[in-house]
Amino acid sequence: MAINDYAVQIPVDEVTADYPIVAFQQDGQAMSVRDKGPLWSSIPMTPILRCSPR
Image (cartoon, rainbow, N blue to C red; front, top):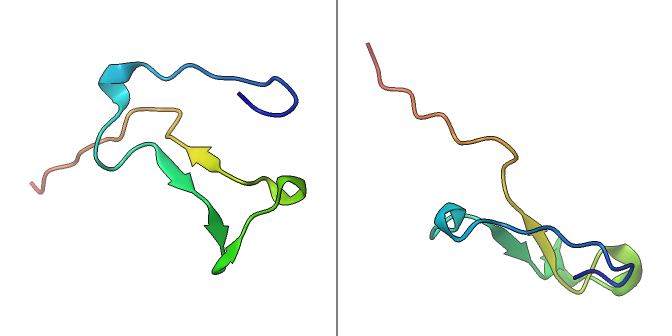
């Protein structure tokens, strides 16, 4: 839940070792609340496409 009450639900089956990405630093510096911190979460909006060579 964000400070402005924004929230998104992520289905548990979409959580993997690689996603979501949770950041607490940007360019080596802790992120402030003013700059999207203290935590920023990112998960792809669409499934990751796995392509195999032909």
